[in-house]
Image 1 (cartoon, rainbow, N blue to C red):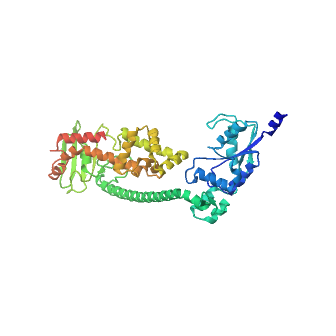
Image 2 (cartoon, one colour; image 1 turned 60 degrees about the vertical axis):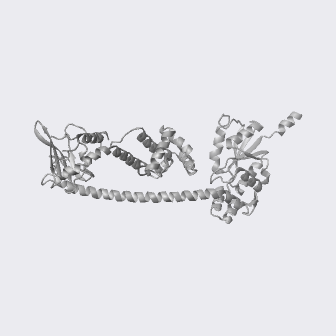
Image 3 (cartoon, rainbow, N blue to C red; image 1 turned 180 degrees about the vertical axis):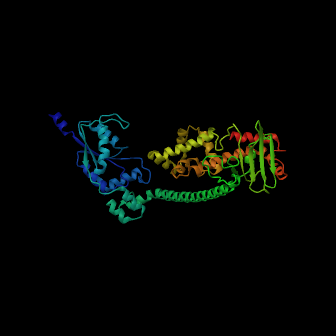
Length: 476
């Protein structure tokens, strides 16, 4: 008889509810009352709280929950999630019961099927197997986000409306409204600072876009000027832009404009041409090769200003070497460092395209804690720690991005990766290459003198220097 009574006394139903409850409000209390209608009930909440959506520390939150609903004492437990809460009930009561999941209709289709699916399965949370798992309806009467919004806007009236409590209700030695505001304040200040940083980024982006537009405009004007200048190179009586078949509209291969004559003449060794002519009155240079069919002109250069014929002065020129293939001018040195920089950009794209990864990146970025981001860069690019530190030093030195390598994904998200990282890096690489050519430039500075004297640009120029220039150009 005693055993039968004991078995009949065991509960056959238990109810659970889980949430952040940060801060707790009257809607939460009504849901807790639904759970309290069952013989066994637990309200679980997370012990680790952090961020603007979870501002109250665990101890303070527990005190507030007890203040709003004293009957919750003894039923309130610290758990990680719905699953660990279900595991707790299973360990205490076994599986021969019906487990009620108390939540509102909006969350029903999220949590109830999820908990039911894990019934009888081992998982990271542990194991449980109940006879039945069913939904128990609780209405959503308010939202913690509205309570936090009222605090953020310093609006006690709305706080009372959405929390269902007196703003001056004492909790943890403070009025409830002031208590929540105290713990939200650091996040509000951080949000304000981030807003200012975003505004600054937007301002910089707008300035860059304006500068880019002005640069494109200047580029278009320059191209138009160059196209007009090309008419001088066209055959008499023909439109130089008419490419509809027949003989080439140009007297020579289509010319290109050079900002510095050294960029043109630096391609050649001292004895590259069989014959050279330079007209100092017109600022025109011509280079020739001799072949079986006779003398063939293979190079032409005309300075923009016949009085300015130095190595750093601009001009228009062309060069054609029969049966040879030049090195692409836009070829980039694909060494280890350059490869890592490009991989960094692709990693930024993957982060931006992955909402969860972006949220984690943004959180660590805003916390000014680079350790996780550095590990992410190492895993995502294959770089070593020392290589990441080196790249950070490089971008800090050249002023690329925002001065820090950890800002790389922000630049991708804002659409400024090329401008903030790749362009400054390419300029940095180009400058390093130019520095390595210092000795060659000493010899080429004599170019101006020879040209002004009416001599060929390659006559009198040290052969070794010209050879190094050609080698440099080919290796680019």
